[in-house]
Image 1: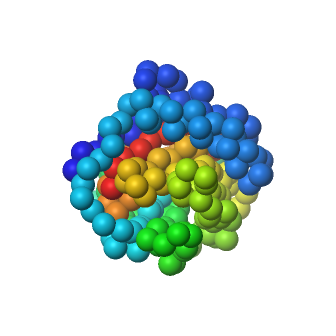
Image 2: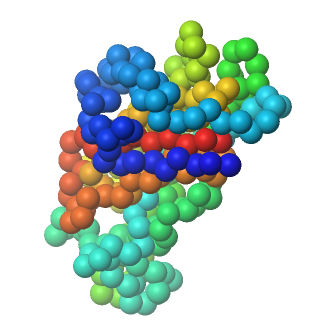
Length: 264
């Protein structure tokens, strides 16, 4: 099956991804508005760029379509991560805290990973039923894997807590006049071991074409860390953080535009 890779800095037909956006993440209404004003333009780009998929699949496999979105701190950031010297997490990697008041924080000790359970700072997962006239949600879940603050010198654990996932949601599931399924996603969570820490933010709209078997994500993410999204294990986006960025770049909302799509 053909897969179209996600593009983090360019949309299709060589046009900058920024053309797909207007508005901000200040509210869920703004999120919906900027997509609704541009989704026809996205569809035209898709029609001009992608041939219809002829897979011979039936609708029976559309009864459970899983999509997951993750924000994670990679285990190897050149010139920034360092090895945990000793203790429970010896051999893993950590990064410096965002202020002199903090010690170090454990990374997620991984690179890109399409596992639905891959360790991440923020995790959003949804299971959709697209086999019927009206799409429904089978299940959705959101969670933050444990954050561990370590002593930078000896690796001793000084804090281990789970972040608050209550501001992470899928919402506004609908079907448009052309048969495409749309659902919004928004996420916001901060470091539970650092009171007043800036949050990791993301938001956007997922568009699914059940007939052509295409899924696209159109949204914005924060300046750090790395972000990835999959449908049934197939890559939709893989968005690395800009070189040199750290958790200190998280102040403010999501401002990096991302767009990606794939067949499923």
